[in-house]
Image (cartoon, rainbow, N blue to C red):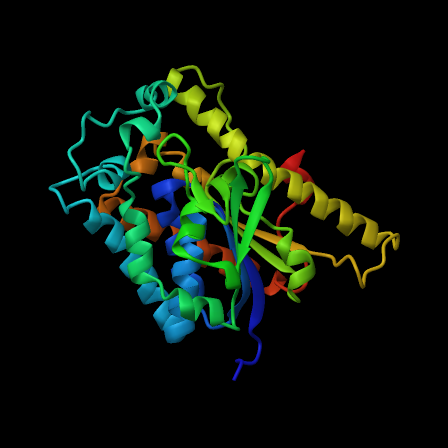
Length: 341
């Protein structure tokens, strides 16, 4: 039975490597609050992983099961890094199953390395323990059959450059890895004869599936990549980081602009509202809190770091609920024009 007064939202989860532990904290707090319900989740990269883990846990164990699954997943990432001795970064974790021919470089040296070496050369066997972890921890059969949560995971088609969105019936470990496939680290993921890279390039996260396939008019965006930076980047590391932030926010800004346009047309009575719904947009923004961490920490797999980000995410979610719960279902709390202009 649905509790009286529960408000339903669609969750949109950005990617950002290890910084996705912030989103873990947000989800943990939302799942703890029975006043909030979920109709659909979209995600890219780390956001896609959080989405499938949460949904699979929810499908088999309800809200407590979803919280437990997320905890188990993030602990699993950190434990994977100890299979072959202590590890400190996702790169060392991913390649921990075989002898590393090099010391994992810090940014910006990693960016230079990535431009000079191909994963088809330095990782010829395409080893990725994360795919094994996802396969072990996520019951994809239950996920595909789950009627309670709709999932939309973005990936980028390498050949066409277009977005591909995988929904529940299409979900496999490969689909999740396609959404999280950074081309400088891994071979492109092949699915049905097409090859895919990280979904963040074209949909970070995708919002458009919510428009015609869900009833809820509220989108709750969990953002971990800052849109704005107050200072001009000057060091090589700062420049690389800012270029990546701009790239991975581009598709999101385009979709927010489209939502604002449709909302304004509806307000003016210029569209058929039976075909074009008004969407209320909310945001839990981790950008300011995460700005204190360098770009290289996106590759950090220490569980202490994950726990720190989780607590920051929980605090951000609790603050959002305290200030904006009443607005859900009534009005947007994110100024869309300010967000993209």
